[in-house]
Length: 113
Image (cartoon, rainbow, N blue to C red; front, side):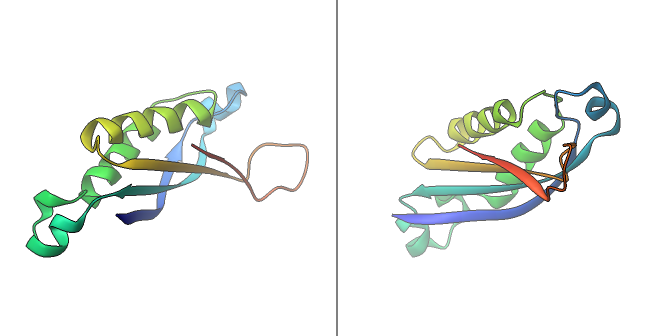
């Protein structure tokens, strides 16, 4: 078993319960972890035998572009899409919302699925 991490995918999205968040948007960082048997790629050195980082990146970018009120739903969609592409892997998705509009000084909030 091996783990592939695609960390620090920077996105601009329009997620949030406040109407202003749908208009103004905000900064997000997405981290993805895929756990699976990548031993074949260790031997073959062939991209077809592993999870392609570019595919993962493109799934994240396309799903982050769809507005939602909750980052929980966005995380579920990302996880489902990656699972469809790489069904034999265990997938962890973390979405970090930077500077959330709260009545206080908070750097970020995040959701992990």
